[in-house]
Image (cartoon, rainbow, N blue to C red; front, side, top):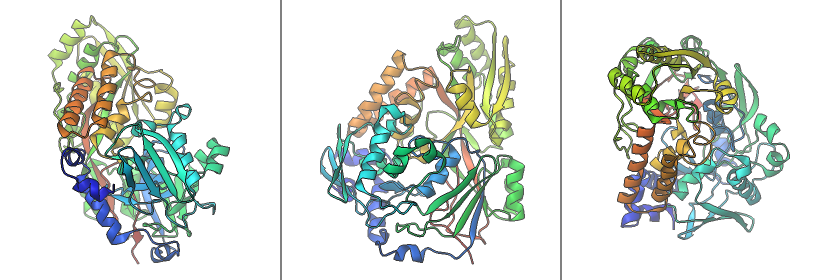
Length: 537
């Protein structure tokens, strides 16, 4: 069954696609295929996308905190880079979030409730010149699903039972259970060359080889990432320039200066204080996002193993004042796990408003009379603006003394969170870069082992077991009401227990020079995208 058939099918499945936020995407998918499917292997599409020897340049906010292997990399900057380096069978456009055929030549074909077939695009090649084969596709999915690899993306595709080759150009997926979102969810797995990635995973992580429109030339931490056009790319979105350079400018002032001086054509994460100033010279647009600032606890460390303590610190944050002061109103205090504009928004039964008296009462209830700890945060500029105000709120609570340390994301997670050497963390997160349906967003932080077991250490609790069961229940049903009810229970549980829970969801301001870029769009996620973008002559 095709995506268009899924979108048109009457009854509960139609309602499910609608509530999952993919009804419109499914229709857009079919329309985009009819209007502008990927070019043939003749290379005509690649030729039409060239824009001369110009270089696209951008200023990036986040440091290069991880490598590029799409099996493991989730850092904001490498993930944004990977949108240009790698392809899935189906991909989501970074700005519009509409699905399109990438390495798939045709719409995924549903054979029965638990079997799908996908034919590969003819003539697709990797950056090293090797053909993209069905064996590479099978390997790419199997490596993500292999528990030994601890892939961050396995929790997004738990419904896949097996992936097999059928002939030289078709891949067959057998599912554990019917999953209506299959045609777009597979976009989370990017296809890699088996012989390269298998031979040296660490080397591949540092020097990735994909089949996307740009190939990596070099990546220097705290400096820049350099790309070049992949001339043999024959997909839908060929590179718009021969070269592309991203300058890693975690310092907000440096990013603004780079945009004002014309050194770069676009920057992400415009400081809120500089929005009006930049608007006088170039285009600036803020997009409401799921992107959140979360509060995370080491739930095996006393007294943070008690939900009352976790709740107390949430009630102890003067969120509205922080949003007005540090973000100039460009965020909304969390009333749920997702933002209020999300199509499946469900208000949580526990909503944290600033209430110092309640915070004091909850600490007393937990038997805590003195609470001293170090808060760890990322060194992202807007987080550094917000964190001292959180600290100020907490230190007003009698008996509470908090200090703070800002770290780069790599050090925060690699040296502290992932080793269990922390008490409380405030950090940004935005899994909506992978997709926007409720199942995916909840799965990122709460499904499987990566976050519940290895980061906030909540996996052995009865509450976590309930969340896992409800995630499975919602994923397996095609009944809208049942899915929404299960999601509601999950949201209420994580809001009340607060092992990891948002403080607010923010707006994302991006700036770009319209006189230099053709087709550029701001993203509703972290990062920038030059997919389908060309320099203006």
